[in-house]
Length: 486
Image (cartoon, rainbow, N blue to C red; front, side):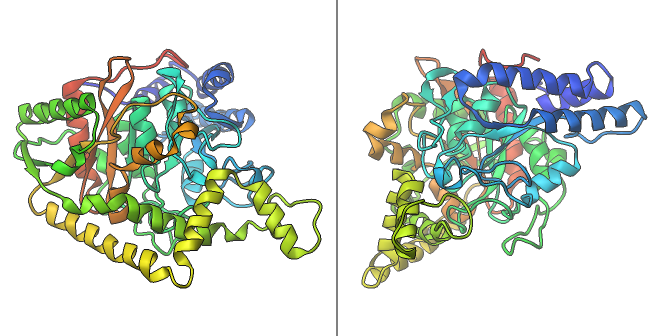
């Protein structure tokens, strides 16, 4: 039975087998060595990490108990606000932005003495599926650096998959935690909308964004989710976790659990990915679960609905970057309008500009009813379709991505195909559901294949338990050759 990396390191710290400062330095050294190849980090914070580690060592020396996440090296996606630490969204328009406040999730983890190794790479403003729209260049896949890590939380997935962080926090708007986790052969949890505070997350699409953990095991994902899923009055959509901590529900028997597979989730999926999902279903059968096949025709609307709604919200959210309040500002201009135009034209990358223009178009007079309003109505159809699905099954099993990680540069040469990598993940965000990705096999080139388990709202405990059962029964995880070896 596998032990989570967090629990293992926690035990080593408590037993004084390693000091927290030694542990932090080990991860700092590995990060500084391997980041040149992985490009996972865009900002390193070694001084902050070592100061926190010293505080943890003092507690241990004084005989005080330490929490599960205390002293554990971790990372934050570069769209999560950190007081006094640069937060750029990997965009030129925020290249020198240093927040004066912390995101709620970082406030929580800071109080628990989490050791921050640095801020991780991402697609610019979280818009992309390969991490290559980053102004710093894309993060690389730790299983093959000639392939992408995925997006938009590619840096966090590369860091965790490359063993240069124990866990990371990413954000998931249409699959941005689960897709890179699937590409990098690790675990990514997108919580129910509202379970984790979005305060301090620099917004892409506010009705879809959600912060969640990226880890190397299901047990670790449960531990981090328990820590960050608190109600926050600063976020009007926050509800916090429902029920007891999910860590206590892992390892429950799943005999009799109904695991649904929607036929539509397997349409257009590469054959080796489909076979891995079917093998995963066989593992669940061996554990006593029942596999239920069903139709979910509303899924065909998910991708167009997602891109209309996400781009519309992005158009509104990114209006604040105008060169007046903060961020990059064009130097030479005729008047205020010219200054705003030049600031936004030079400050935003092509993908971000494309999505802002699309969002502005679908919100404009004459097109609002034809696109935005229709997409909102179809969103309701998708929500209801999932509600009906959970009347016939407990969780849904699906591919995370229809393929494995593609080569660097392909997102630029074939952008349409990269948009299609979101086809299995966006329905979860549209319906506000929890979903978890974990590895379920490897292709002929040794690249990871991801599967996702989708639950009803606030059913994190159910999908984490089902994921844990599969992880331990199948035992398919393969560590990369990078980073710290424990």
